[in-house]
Structure formats: C-alpha cells, structure tokens
Length: 270
Image: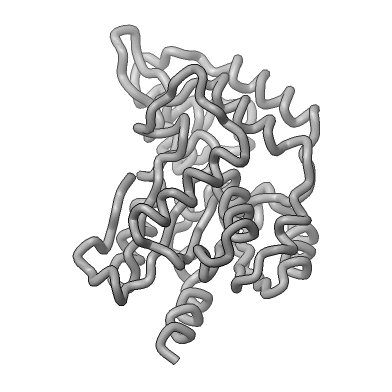
C-alpha cells in the first residue's frame, strides 16, 4: 500500500483509493498518486494475491473478498467518503463497492473495464497465455522484451507494456518470476468473467466517469451504454492508448479525468 498526501489534514482533505487491475500492483499508480497528492490524500492498494500482499494458498479470491478489502481500507484509513479509481478488475471492484456502500464512495472512475460477460473462451485463452510465459526470465531485459515485443498478444512493439510487467517480477536464484501466482490470478478472474455486471452498475449513486483507451479492451459502444446505465455517468476517452491507459499515456489520462475531479472538489466546497 502506498499513501500520497499523508501530510494533508485528513479532516479536510478528500480521499482517493486507487485499485489496480489483475496482475497489477499499487506502484502502477505512482504517477497518478503523485499528481493527486496536492489536492487529495491518495492511497494505492496492493490487493489480495497481488504485489507485496500475502498470498496464502487458501485465500479467497471472490468478488466479495476484493470488495470487502477495499471497504476495509477506506474505513481503517479514514479515507471515506472517497473517490475510488479502478483499472480493469479494480474498476469492477470499485463499482461493486460503490453499489454496496454508497456512504463510502463520493465519486467513481472506471478505467477500461467491461460490464458484459467475457465467457469461457476468454478464461481458456488466459490459461493458455499464462502457460506460454517463458518463466523464469533470465533478466529484467528479457521480461521487458517478451511482454513488449515477443508475447503473441502484442500486435506491435509496446515499450510501456514491457515496463508494466517488469514491475510485477521478483528475482529468485534461477531468474525472474511474477510476484503473484498465476493460478491465483485465474481464480480471481473466474469469479467475474462468466457474469455480466450491469445490475451493480445501475445501483451506483455517485457521479461516475467511464474512461477508455481507443485501442483498449472496452469498446466505445459498450462504454457509452455503461454511461447510460449509470445514474450519473460521464464519458472520456484517451487517444493513442490501449488497455494500460494510466501507465501508457499518463499525461493524457490526467487530462481526461481532471474535469471530473474538479467537479468533485467544487461540490465539496460549494
């Protein structure tokens, strides 16, 4: 967990909780958290099974468990009511939390996450993809090259993607391994890929911004339908960005969300 803006007065400073996606970690939000820290108390969470969090074999990787972790973080750190920003799986956690506990969430930013079901074929593709990883990687340079160039899922060289995955590797005696257990990632994923999540989206009462990269995984038509379903939904998109919008295009990402955050701050002072 990282906490930016901890020197600000928690009694008067609005909180922001940043939730990474599947396989991500809190540090992927570093530039966003630094940017927010002048006006918000921003906390990025290593969610269960990810980053530096514990990874017990028997841990629950259900949707409820992820939502309850975010709920506990907001309450224990005194961040609520907070703006909750989520990427991919973290965005689903964010809107499920907002639906369950509207008292804890004053604003919601959903980054590149679909509300529709992805299905069994998608889960099989992910299982095959994990098996294709050439683990252990000999060096971090090999990590960057494989995920940025050689990975069959990469259509063209993508330096930021290579850097993104380099951040989730740790060195062992035989080389570099992911900090997470791929099987645990698949368990996390199977708790949401088979279902649609429109119903919880419709229950979100706070202002909500849906953001997509033009080359990301959330299509424009679905994103706009999500905005329509959200009672107080808004829409933004980032050009020249794929799924890793906040990591790949940090300046454009900040430009996309700043008007929404300014409105939240204005509502607080009016």
